[in-house]
Image (cartoon, rainbow, N blue to C red; front, side):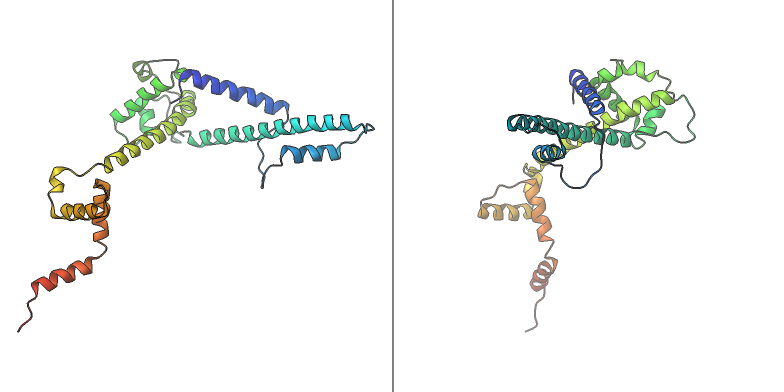
Length: 246
């Protein structure tokens, strides 16, 4: 997670770029196809320009200025589009209260609206982690202090633009870490009890022949592949049990 200093730097850069976009007439635009290159844009501007000066050195200098200006404009446009997309993503992630909600509400009420499928302990853990990670937005208040809040519509909206976007990012990171840990575990070998089973011994023998390392993941896949041929197993079992009459 980004610390308070990093968040402040990001917000400051965002504000500076917003001012640049405004003064240079840059705004989010929807278009199809690739942007023109700086050279193409400068060439077009030079073609459209008119003036009495035909000095080649001055014309080249003007073209170079146009090239730098067009390069800056394209960079600003790309940044503006990215900022706009981030704002749209944050807006869509905001939490909306029930239409008939009465105000104010408690922090527990807010958590039930935000995370209805989580229990009380999980919700409290989320809030505590947010207070730890995003102290710049919360002013460094404690969980006990926040738990005493009376949340009106304005404070509800404030949490919607601070807590909820943070939670979306935190959840993605937590899920990624969980999947990574699960992957590590799956490459470990089976426990001693499973290794004693006939199925595992057969799987181990095949691995030794192929020069492969045994693992939980490999054994699970091996069992799944064996299930793809139930008729062959059934036929072998029937042939063992049926004794043809002489």
